[in-house]
Image (cartoon, rainbow over all chains, first blue to last red; front, side, top):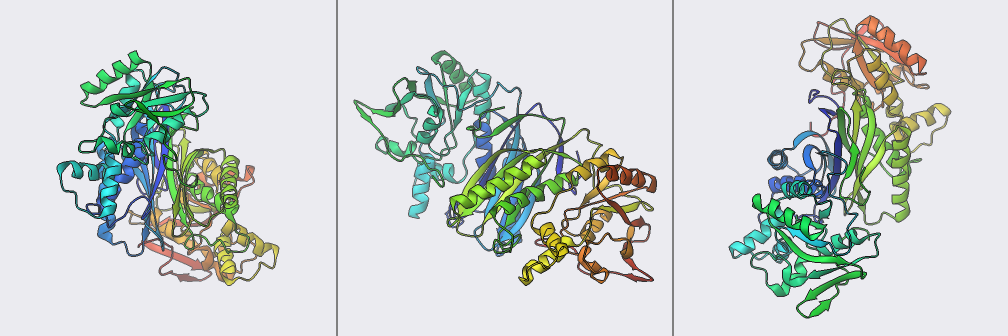
Length: 299
Length: 299
């Protein structure tokens, strides 16, 4: 509504607003010397990280506010590429870049976005709370690609196959599940989140405050193409896949699966909640527990 | 609306949304070794910087999203104090902290806030565009305190008088003119902005895209208590005062002045717009121009 020269952006509001913010710090969240990574991909990834949080609520993206803290050595063409990545990923998901801030730092490049989206009612959204014993647990897409890609990037070995290139892409330039999030809500699902902090960590969060537990069936995990089934832990811990997890009674889950299939999206049941506390992984006839899975700063 | 454990915050929306983001980087925007500065004051200042942008639009604050990028050496009690400052300044101005993100860095402490506010209509707000020749220019509060305070802090001399303590406070812990911004709009003023990048720079912005100019009467500048009139340039360039500037025809300005006075707020006419291009400072019988006033990163 207001001119871009003003101190703040103005837009016509929505009835229910969803907002999130995420920061990426150089050498912690990304490395500019990763093969295939550059300022444009960084811009896309910054938007994707935040879009994934909106997707996790089943929200539709609307506006982005960007804050870039650049090193003195950042060139004008780096900044142009960074903005290009931000703009193209925003546009792709129907989000307008409404404003921003530019600063300089003697330290690592630090980029922050705040994304504002909408839901149509206070009830039609995904929340971490409300799962019940007996409900199925499902995930969108495939698992393990981001972690396998990170391992490849850190090893400095060039990806040698289409599968490996796919892994690297899901680490560097993931696609946030914005459409899936809204489709899950549309199909009646109300419990879910994103697993970009790791599948294990997200199951823990869905259990928070309840006395329930969960069993995940390792054989049902939709591992990314090319990942050996023996590497399933990559899909569970520190996994960083930009996919969604959700929980619902079997019948609702089946409806959601059909709804996503019509959009060429995949939803795979991987386990269920149950009364017995703790998180168990059923691997054939064995039941395993993972220690120290998931990743959190300052924990 | 949603639980704080979710990936994003949800709230009931407003018809017209105003949003802004600002970042503060250690050793560029603040120094933790400044006398009287600490993590709590930093938290308040982070919110104030952003509130000042909302004030500049005449908006009412609603929600804040916070992103903190902390050094590894930051202690838990530093973080608590930082949050305390953020929370108390937000609450004071009717703003709820709706969400945030926490990261770590090997570089300087970097804190970002995005603030979301509301205006009641797309027309009832302050914008940098639309000033006309003949209109009066006015500022809220007093000028020069923040710049004088910064000079004192950088000199490492302890403030020696109540006036000097006031200067330091307006640098470290300024009060954003949120109430004044809304009162100006309520009184019919539609052109304005904040002068936290310097009064001169803001007058330039109000002139952007027009062929007009402005004359500021140095004798009318409401200099902060204790500042010598010969130091008036401090009030004009790099001034960083968290005050508002506005422009309107004389009659509207008089109404606004009365409206602010009823709230114990000050509005002082300091000059006017005119057809002749350029920015002039009338100092008694002399007319001066300033070179290189105002401050902008990467300019």
